[in-house]
Image (cartoon, rainbow, N blue to C red; front, side, top):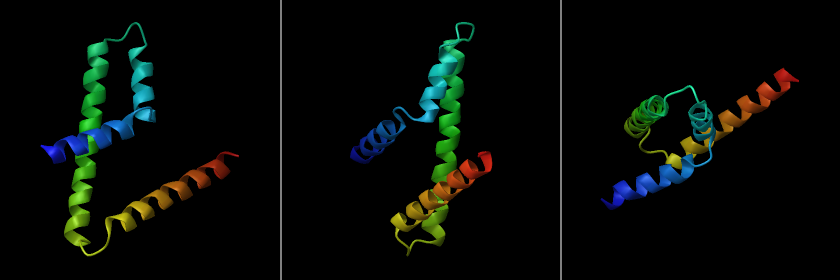
Length: 92
């Protein structure tokens, strides 16, 4: 159970105040929209994205087990950063 609570706390804290949560708040603040529908739709989206991340992590572990996870995380963040910078210059 320690591992479960560690993962839960880490993901919960990482999700606080992110774009996903802000979007959910905006959907829920619409008076004409069912709050239960917002909850289940947002929950399903988070479950689906977590499933994709878990499958990706399993693939990384299977095919690249000898390389450190920090390397993949660093490359991923670098790619996201480059894409965001490129998007900024395209919009300008």
